[in-house]
Amino acid sequence: MNETIKTILGRRSIRKYKDTPVPRELLDILVDCGKFAATARGIQPWFFSVVTDRAVLDRISKCNRDFILSLPEGAMTERARDPAFDNFHHAPAAIIISGCCGDNPEEFTIADCANAAENICIGAEALGLGSCYIASFKFCLSGPDGDWMYSALKIPNGYEPYYAVSLGYPDETLGERAPRRENLVAYIG
Image (cartoon, rainbow, N blue to C red; front, side):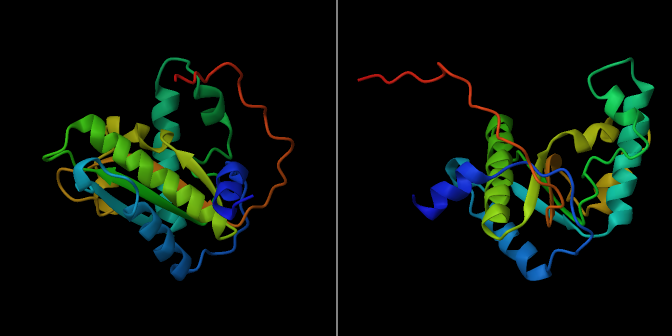
């Protein structure tokens, strides 16, 4: 089977990482993977914040945990109650993908940023790194203490963080992959 297809079919979300730092050269390659994602009308509406400072990732996780626990019971409440809660799964690095609508309709910007996140995940798999595609890292932006995140991540004015990808060397062995759902394809013609 083609190596690219094997990489796509083999990629899994990793939620436990070794403490080993991800080399800057690999992070640079992964940002390039994001930059070369498909983008509507070639606008490239993204901004990448590459975070290797665990204090920043820990602060985002704490802010999110506090915000989630301030809400009525919901799907994330049980996870947030865990003292080891970490949106980034204790990974040594994460790339935050923000988008700016500007001349681009918002739905295209969100899709473009999602494409960039997926490219980063596939690139990580090809480089022997683990990754996890994350949207739940941004809850705290709605809270009273959320503005600091834009500054800490150096997000330019007019950009909105949409996705994050945690990155690191896997420290878990995943079990059998869940089967793909059936009857979700129709061939026409």
